[in-house]
Length: 294
Image: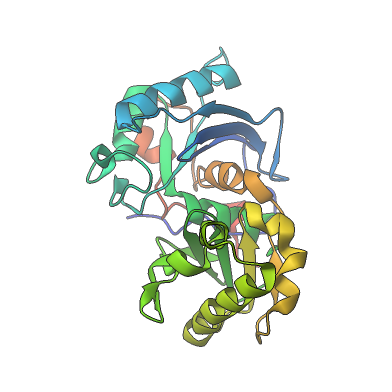
């Protein structure tokens, strides 16, 4: 039976609190060792440029290099688990899409492939879901119960929905149709840049989108992430919603932190041949003490 998703909580994780999180983006692959007691990297957040062809093999080789750089395969670190956030809808370890990546990802059991390629317990999670988990556990949503919606405004619109501390995976709200167009084609950060919209004009676009989302899901809190959140003072004050809308706290580290958090399960033992499935469950894994709903 699959365990429930990693969930926010207030208690520290049981066992070792250090996990590795890696966020695979269209331009950069970022990774760090994360202390899950705090959600803070224990050292430098390292990054490598994403291979230009974006194939699974090339990305796996880059992951191997990044893990080596982080020292994950040093003696004594035999129980390390790796969480990998990818720009794809992920279902039971299988990639169902490939945003800004090669089509070789689609239909591949990425989780099993990376476990075999890296020789480590690996869990794979959608990148927006990872960011949402991190913000709910450690960031702007850490004090909010109920329905929390995390939207990442960038090339498109990534979304994560967390209900009473539980992630609803692969919640693709960027594909909603608004006024005859896909929402992310009009309300993403890249759409604002391409069309040269001022902040007031962009706020009106975002208002239209968020009003529709609010009507559909009645969230208790909306968190806006992505690079554009650094400019939130320029557009958030112009929004008029019943739901509070606030900027993300974790900024560009959210995907790395959330990927690391996803490695926590009810039992995470040292990696042994043939037992990696017991160490790390995909999106429907659980956080034991750390994952109790507040």
